[in-house]
Image (cartoon, rainbow, N blue to C red):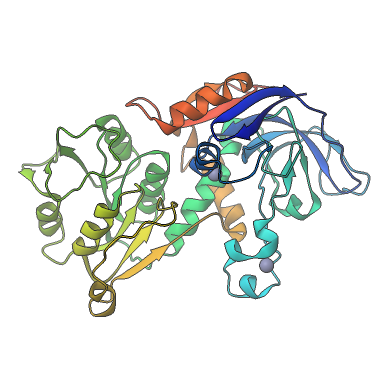
Length: 378
Ligand SMILES: [Zn+2]
Ligand SMILES: [Zn+2]
């Protein structure tokens, strides 16, 4: 079969590898769609893991072979896969810290070599310990939607870490695919979302996804500059008379001086974290979702945590227990994941897909590698 093999930093090659052999408790799935995820991009570009590997973990496809002892799934079923599933029994799991569970950290899906997801290949082997994470895709839904369950799960998990009440005001900084998922899920639970992004195309979608207010820094900053600061920028709010002031001033007006109840930071900018801390009310929360690079030394005023009781929290990866709720949100299209997918690349252009995902344009949001077996247009 064909597979895109990671051979070193920024070195992806289309190769012919054996179709994975499966054991009596495994599934063999023919991949239809695999989402391009920033965590894989980081591993590929920085070479953080030893090669060779076949990446890709936001996978949907069709079961083409089932081991003799597999009872719960049948050949021909269309499924969404999860490459990590916790044991639900260890110390970490008892604390509901599933992403820290040793079993969870193992990758249970492979197209060959050291298991790494395998979605950038024609077939993957699904191991028994991740079978509880396999979700059937309803007939009316597409593989594209199935492939979005994993990223939506990571966002829903993060939303649940926020202690919010209906009507609370929350900043979502960054309206890429992940930021837009936050905007939608927060709006669905009655939160008033203040969405910011440098790209107006993304803000338009944020509005359609339920943002109560959208703001774009009026700046000469390049849209891709990852470390812009809100502080110095002027903002405009298309639907109100408020124009030409800083975000801090806007938040002050929107919340009648009380401050935001929470801020979600979906851009890897440290200065945005500091500014969000200042805009959040006492005992509010700042949630980091995009700060995945280790080793940065960033000065923070820790008294905002200690004295002002502003919690600084993080969230990473998915929560297995939320799977059914995530499937409902995506498959009923309460969160219409199709609107987030802007580009599909064939398998042999996986490197181009990753290149575009790491240098987003005004038009690009979620990018997928699609092999299109039986794929419906929706
Ligand atoms: Zn992912
Ligand atoms: Zn565990």
